[in-house]
Image (cartoon, rainbow, N blue to C red; front, side):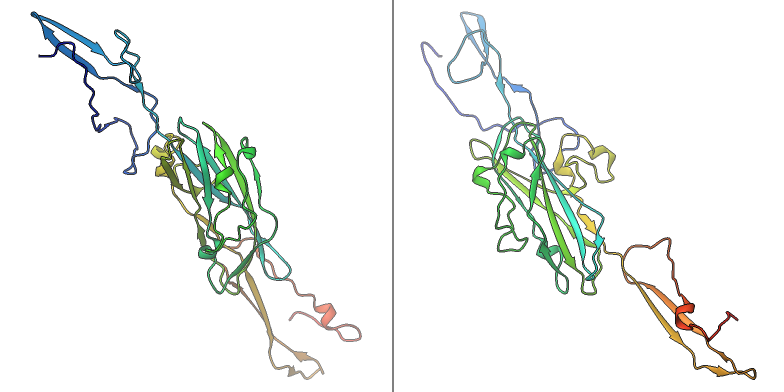
Length: 296
């Protein structure tokens, strides 16, 4: 029997949410509330109260306790590689991060280990200053020391980087890659991390494209407000075409001319199919006047 008695207990809660497409990482977005009900019997009558939010009891107030779940998403896209005169390629990687939860995020960090994407014999350099954009570009601070290696894999200064609720920011990494005979495909992923005000951590692995919530070919996962079930690597392949030409031994003809067979060989050294392939050969520059030639 309880009379003029006050007590408090803390109940470890297991929350079961009937949501679709939730993975085992158990970070979900849910904007509902939770209520507890207290019941008792006195003098044959039952009394009860539904909980209100907070630690101070307000009778007959049942606004419930809000449930807040943090969530961050990241996507990464690659531009079409542009061939350079020295045999290297320029690529722009664009990283998009978004706060999908209903709590502000701080200590935001993005790491991208390009040295794992382009192993030996390939080499790479960050060819220009990494830039930032998006609606919340002002909320993130770039790490000037980032070089894509294990020494400096972090793109941001986390202490001064944050994302408000629904905040979006982008980071562009201009890269120059020297294939040195390796043409791909080179798969890359970036990682995002952040914390809430009470230091609850959230993380995500990038998916290919500009939308962190893209399904990666799985329609059920696309646009479900759960970026954790989207983690398709971003591929890059370098096209490379080679050509060789050989000449047969000239064969003297009875009219004083010579017959020659030229053999032209084309080879696709890359890992992507090539179209609109063409080979040109201007024989007039090879056999100028007074010599003459015909295709026999």
